[in-house]
Image (cartoon, rainbow, N blue to C red; front, side):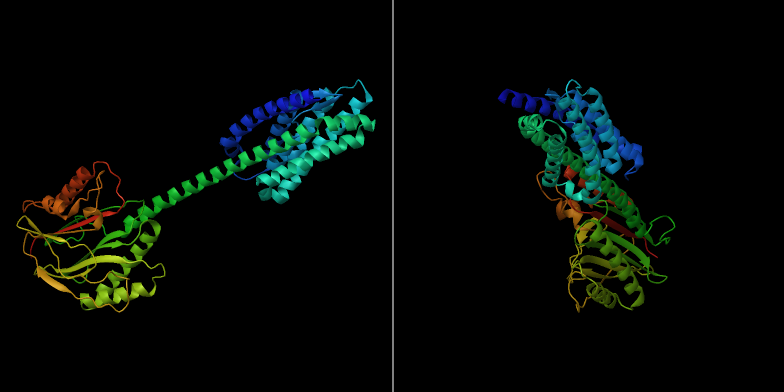
Length: 458
């Protein structure tokens, strides 16, 4: 008896291993999704039924015979078909495996015949019952303990039919006593392993689809974010008194840095560079809000200090995410070169006059959206013909190399030592090249945004 038990275990486990490999190949591929789509339909149920039927036939053919009974993992096929294809899939698999079992069953004795009938009925019923259970409790069946319980109940049901149908009862009882342990254990555990495997592949497929969807949405968000930035072209701002160039490279698909250039009136041009706290979608949304708020306030209020004070209060009032934004904003009178500016916690820009760079390190105010009621003081300076103003976010000076050394203000200043004829786009290109050389392939974790203005005089 111990030898029979070992043989049953060995044979059933070997057959189960083959079924697991095939199920893993099919479940891990995109074949079902490509052929039938993501939703279950009758074609899907038919495929599941046919596949489960094939598994059932293979289980019968590789099983061991004991007194006319074929001890196998046949039931796993209909159970799997019921789980994946519903009642229809379970019925198809059960009928296929059951019919095959009927024709290969031994007919030498009445006991063997009755064993065949019991197995056929059990196989069909198990497929249908698993189909209805899956329809009603599909999510629960994905959990290993529930799948194991269902597998045990189905195999107990199978053996119970053997006891009820097979005569004489002593012969049926002898068969059940000999096989119940490997029969119940291997079939139940095998069903659990397949369900767990299928659930895993299903989760991975969903994750992959979500990643693909998110990637598409981020690509769209990137396009939208860049469309919010002013198009600096030959026709905009379209004034001979000024030359402009800008660039923004987000560390992620979308970022929180932004720049803006707009006319306050016919002769006054406002330009902004800003850096929102955080990264990704939240920073991009706050960036859009900040940009619009600042621009509206600068156009609506007579002084820059008043405009930024109001903009700060407005951003604070709706700041449930507790984000903030550093800002450097200037308003340049194109006819005189007079520049009025406000710094709200942002990096000091660099004034390049006669080829010599100098940081404009004046007193800075608090970041915007940090606290309501803050008053911002405007400051002034005058640009002369040929002067260039270089504005940037901290992604420039904090760019790291593989040794985590920062690019720093000194390297930036050295890079900005240039002749008086260089255009803003050439200056930005030089700084980009210097950052890339410093980083030497190291990944950057902050947005890198630059804005360069050249005053050409009235």
